[in-house]
Length: 138
Image 1 (cartoon, helix red, strand yellow):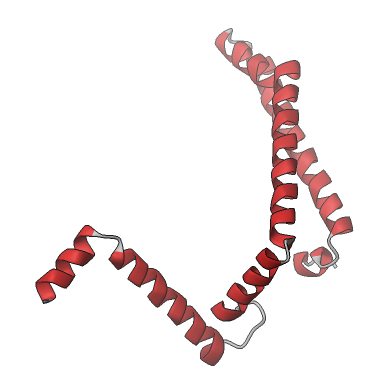
Image 2 (cartoon, rainbow, N blue to C red):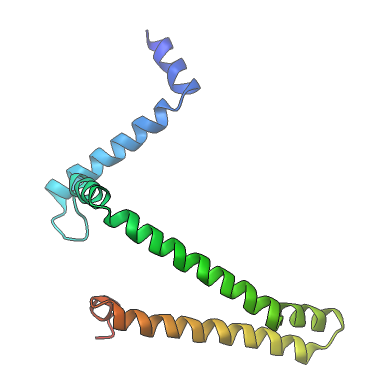
């Protein structure tokens, strides 16, 4: 009997399922009896909220909006990369040993990333009310 169980655990995904269930059980136990914080909710509360969001269509609506934003950002980045060609400019400068031009391209890409990050942080702080509280900016 024990050999059959061991063989089953080795040849199927049963051990992984058991591990996940044990970790979820440990999480549930710790959330109910050890940690009493809002940042560590019980697993049952998470599954309940997930089911409610799936049932009323909220989750699907937000997933579609997220997918749309991702694709829009991706295609804008591709269009910008093709038209501006900073990556091509930097590689060409590297291959032709134009070191100042190469570093100018690298600096431009880094500056673009920094400015884009700042713009996202500003938009996030204006659109999401709890952002200022959680980020410590105040």
